[in-house]
Length: 173
Image 1: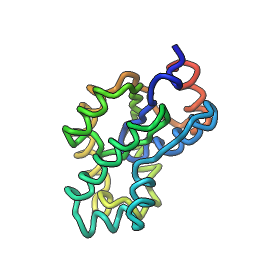
Image 2: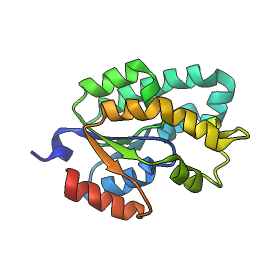
Image 3: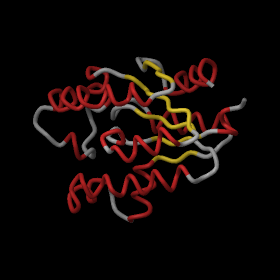
């Protein structure tokens, strides 16, 4: 069975794991569509995720995220890069579990996240004084959720996004 013809490939994991970058490369290599939930929300709403968070708070953003996930899961099989918090909403995890999807968890540690996100100023949940503490708190809640949802787990590290995409195609698809 060719997964790219029968199922969505959904990338989950914490911010900074490389979901958007790896997803785009995977889609290009496999010749299928690619959608990043945050980018799709920004396009649909005409404003940044930051502004959605500012105006509607996290709860409002999560509702929009769920609607976008539903929309993308109704498309023909494609690559979907989720936001790091997709797993905190029970409706989202239920949608993913019942969808025809290969769910790949890009696992990374807080140290790697801190390095990759060191210059990032746009992520709403990182606008705090102690990023390490925030990322550690999120990891303690979210990592078990990613693990329970994933059909495949890929450890990210120091390799490039292109190398990650190649590893996923070679070993997991």
